[in-house]
Length: 211
Image (tube, helix red, strand yellow):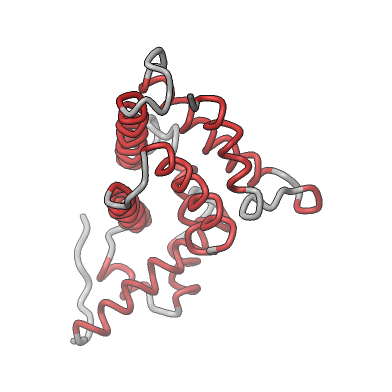
């Protein structure tokens, strides 16, 4: 049975910083070693805290991963809402999203790690149903956003009415994840700078759709 251990009294700021340190350490370890190969011992050593501090904030490794995925979902939701309020047409929104995604993951180490960890949870329904549910939520929110933009593009006569927004959303999402998967898997000496070529990469998909 899980019992919360006694910890010396800390200020809220100190406790929040300890929790943040544990999350950042877990992100580093999950990224470097994989989720399955990361232990609580590795996380606390990386964070520079005690096991007692870990168990004060989290029940187990899975709860840490859960918290990291919650952060990812919140970040994606805030990002999508921000895009909608920009003064751009729907195809420009989709292009901007792809360019931002490729550029940010290439240049921002934290976002790169978050995305890699998220990708590790895809297809984990049998062994990690909670994390699979998180992945499904991000996937559903993303597809819904993409479909809405393609539907708006049809209404604005930016693309042909013959196009199915649901199919386009699926293809767009598959293209983005495919580019990122290929980039992660490619040896560094032959890898493509997806930040520099971000606009060209997404134009290959979107330009043929334009009327």
